[in-house]
Image: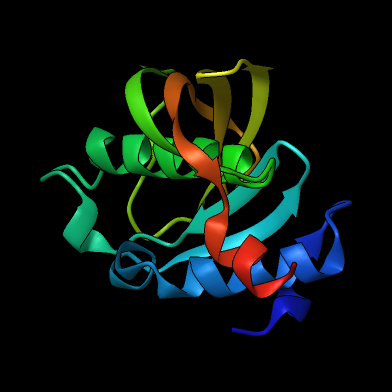
Length: 154
């Protein structure tokens, strides 16, 4: 993956490169063809160009796909702060339909970071910039920071 396509919005260069490599190694990102648009401290932007295989019989994007995109964006916003996490819970408000074969963008940011949990929000837009959904999630921080990066970069 070329990191030149991904915007760095203020993360240390070495850590940014490490995160971009980690992104590429996640099977779900390749399977669903999810791309990373930008990373910043406590923020992430991603995009999916879903095909018909992710739609309902009326051509609308399945809500579960929108939830995957929101969850992924929020998780990566947290990862930019140097911690790994797992989702405890999340909810999504679907505000307008998204359709297959149209790009869907998610922008996420951390809104509260504690010692054990983090709360993040994601906003989903269609390719016309129209608001499609809002999501909020609570994530449990995993013990230890990004150990692979720290081991390789003492």
